[in-house]
Length: 166
Image 1 (cartoon, rainbow, N blue to C red):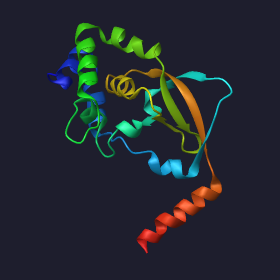
Image 2: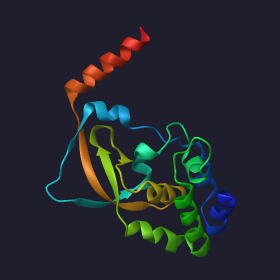
Image 3: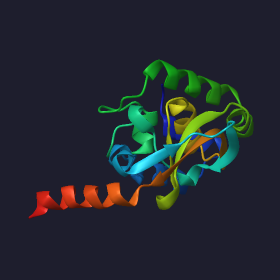
Image 4: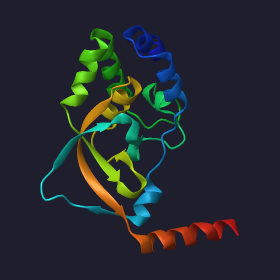
């Protein structure tokens, strides 16, 4: 991949968005899974989700590494470089609008942490979510699993964590 920043600017992604993607860190949602319970939907729920609400790439994302660094497959990134190269090649050949339209049609899987109001990739769609977010797409089509905080598990988790800071 050549310079991702150069192609993003050429395609019309704003410099401020690129700076935001360089400074916005992916985080690991694993701690939330200790005190959240997933609820199975009777039938799949599909929605267009604002990319601004997606905070984690799930198990393939590296905590503490920026979204931009993930797209560049920088050291520490757990992103498949071949799939990122493919996305980059599509971006080179298409207009930004054509590239982003794919994310309105090909659903990813997200988990919604309702009480903390954010989404994370939930198995399928890491690369699509990453490239949609980095290119500034407003939304992405997703199959949603809802998770709600279990208050007792949360209190236990807080107690467990606070014992490390005594």
